[in-house]
Picture 1 (spheres, rainbow, N blue to C red):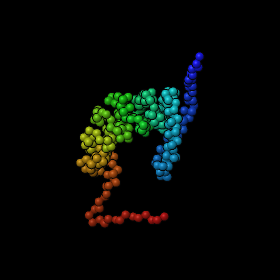
Picture 2: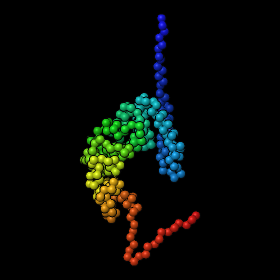
Picture 3: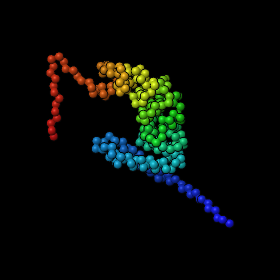
Picture 4: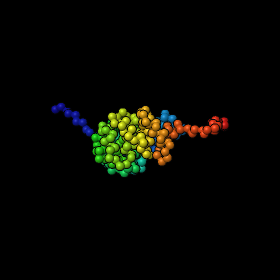
Length: 267
């Protein structure tokens, strides 16, 4: 009688304590990475060596457990501090259906102040089309204004136009955040209704008008420079794009001598 080889499947239980340790380390390295990105003594290569490689290693450690670590470790971490939320969101964004369902539920239930940290983690996942995943799992037509704004911010970061027209995502919104995010997206991604959206908001007050003016300047739309000059002249119009503030010079009065710029002394 011939012997038949039977393959034994050895299933190693997931060490949740090690996953939690990876989460704690990732939380720390996320903060370190963000500080290094704006530090004067770090270039991008140093940031990669200093924090990014170790951070990505922690993200891999959170993903290696698969679906078994979502409910006991990752789902509760989505309610933590901003750095912990971002780290967990990035880990989940590289997962499968169960991970994305967890993310979608967290986005729908999150308060407005928690959404930027979740969006920051999601937008950094480059291996998947995160915009398509979010559109498939979220009912954006009936979503809250803060969630629409977070979704549009992710689209702008990924340079990816959503399937739905921008006007359909911002129409009926009581808060200015979705419209501001849509205006920022329109400067990076050519969308059918982007220019009309920018033109209609050029003279709006506050951050919406500022975003429209800057997007109009980037795209070279007629009227954007005039709207920016008007915003500089009218007090109380809100934020003005930095490129306009930097270009504004005080004209000397009639008969007033123009002083040369002072030179800094050496040492």
